[in-house]
Amino acid sequence: MKNLKQRWGIRSNFHLLIIFIVFGITGSVSALLAEPLTHWLGLTPENTNLWLYWPIRILLIFPIYQVILVVCGFLFGEFQFFWNFEKKMLSRMGVPIHKFDKNK
View (cartoon, rainbow, N blue to C red):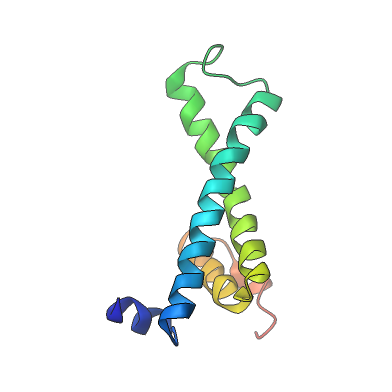
């Protein structure tokens, strides 16, 4: 835990707990939203090949997860941490994140 706190620049164990809670809520909400979204698009495991269904479902969840992570982080008072986390993750994926960074 000490290394994680140091790596993320976390001040206290309580701060770390809040971050873990936000990640947990975000993952759970994303998983819950995946099924209605795929059904709304007409994709179900019954009418779609599973080798196609699951990759599509995961690709659909990814952008939703990103938004929910920042929103949930905001609601828990950790917007700056999760916004920086988001920018770092998206920049590693090749998204030109400098457009969203007001400091540059």
